[in-house]
Length: 215
Image (cartoon, rainbow, N blue to C red; front, top):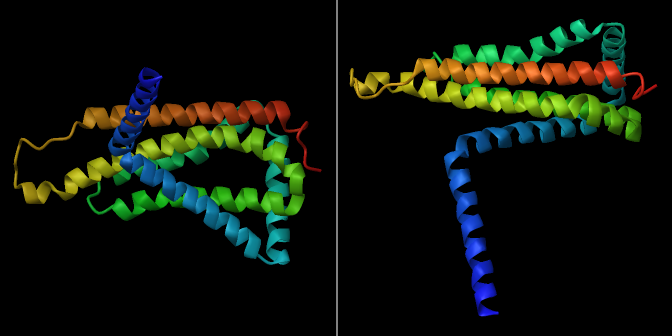
């Protein structure tokens, strides 16, 4: 009994320590993810406080967007989805080379979360439970992948921007360096994730858009 209790206690300490180490090593990504979730919450609150005229306008905009996508073929859906998510990655890549771009980098997850919360909140406000399937299948899967890409890009852009911001204080210290090859490689991974997100969104929309029609 004692051995079992000690074993459980040791495992709890191990998992607690592992979780702590993971949080410590990925603190920046976790904070950026928190900003994204905060944006989702704020976007939802904005929808709840919006007037009926605003919701009607959002409904008309969404209806036009949905009709345009329903008439598009698979390649058009893919290009549309890829361009929207890849834009964030391109902006972040450029921001990494600017020493004072930290506010822009940090604001992007909040902005993306705000847009997601506002758009999905408007769908639920107008369609009610009928929007659950639409959001779960056509919005959520690709959003998860593209958000991971965004957070990865934000982390790398912050690292490089911080490196450039400290360059003046280092006064030519050659020991301080940053691998641009690694920077570009990680942004290639982020771009590949955006590519995957676009494939997922286009494929799911092409397959299930009519089945999950909101009416």
